[in-house]
Image 1 (spheres, helix red, strand yellow):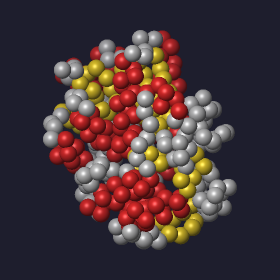
Image 2 (image 1 turned 180 degrees about the vertical axis):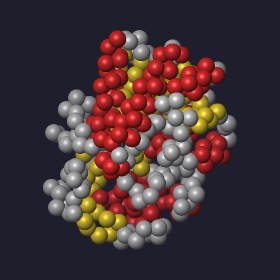
Image 3 (image 1 turned 45 degrees about the vertical axis):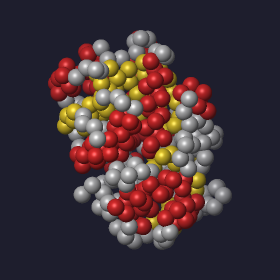
Image 4 (image 1 turned 90 degrees about the vertical axis):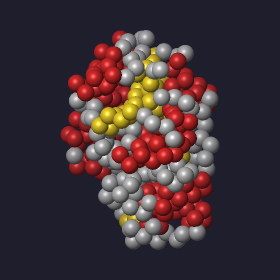
Length: 337
């Protein structure tokens, strides 16, 4: 039976993707270098799904191992999550981000070509829209990047566009998703960032569990309904389902396709804080800090194209997202440690 390769499958989104594939009765192989993820997430996947799968600890830039992986397993499609993803860190270590994200994808494409695997779903990001020229964001909005992380996503998108022009038989999906949050309903699988979280929801949950003293809210003078930044938060389970829908879509639609994955609803930082407090009965002390450079006032998706093409739309609301995050964090105060 042919299998799906999940790069970065031990990471936050990748591990939830494993659960979704198992639920759909599909076989898969995980490759991950574990530099910003844990093998314990894969153990959790096995407990949740009661399914075994192959895991290869390797870096995507190791082409010999990649080629061997494609040789050992009958791969028919790749879900590509592997890469570094912290915006702040990318500003401090730009070369690492270009090397890991861009070079890693380049090596993956070469290995796929060699193995004649022509189906790829790429994990892109709403960061490719840069400073939005319109809200909500549609797939034909102008793209730009405000940080090296976003730039790597943009370069990979352009690389895939160029590649698709000379390989019209390839089936490539680029999914631009907004702010993934939430956790598996079992409380066994969730987001486990290194150090102080870069994103809002894990920061809130670590304050709730007592790991951090208070939430820092960057800016209270944005041109939004309460002065705090507005973002589109999407449950990681909805996101995983979107990748499955994209895979199905590619079966009968060769070429390259771009879709936004978001709820289409923007929530301000304060609204998320209050939603978390209300859903879980836990107070979240917070303080205001100056705006961060490169931040924007608001950003949310128009996900109509995904609904029409893929038959996909987000199902879970902000309350469910908050409940699932707290179930995971309260049971695992120190993540997978």
